[in-house]
Length: 105
Image 1: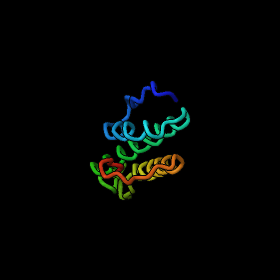
Image 2: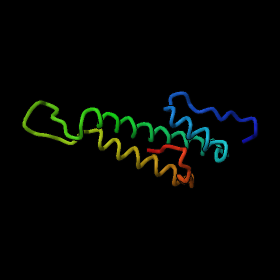
Image 3: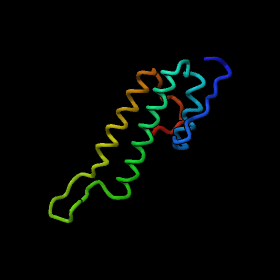
Image 4: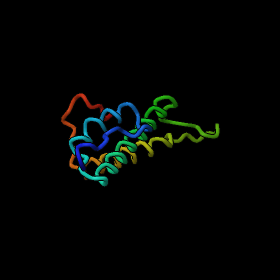
């Protein structure tokens, strides 16, 4: 990629993911495939964080039909799978979190 490449983050990413994008992409975005993997990883991170917010708001245990059976919140699985997808993307890109200014939680 040349120096004139636009490193603007995709507009649908969260503010946190946009900050990560702006830090990571200029240093590692050497190809379209790497950019796609960064984007996919950050979308997974956003999805995991959205699931976590839903769990925090609604609780870890839900009673979906008002019956006697209690269930784990379905967003727990989504959070787990999305965080794993983020971690796979970052591992593939050989990125590591040694920067305290980037919030990956």
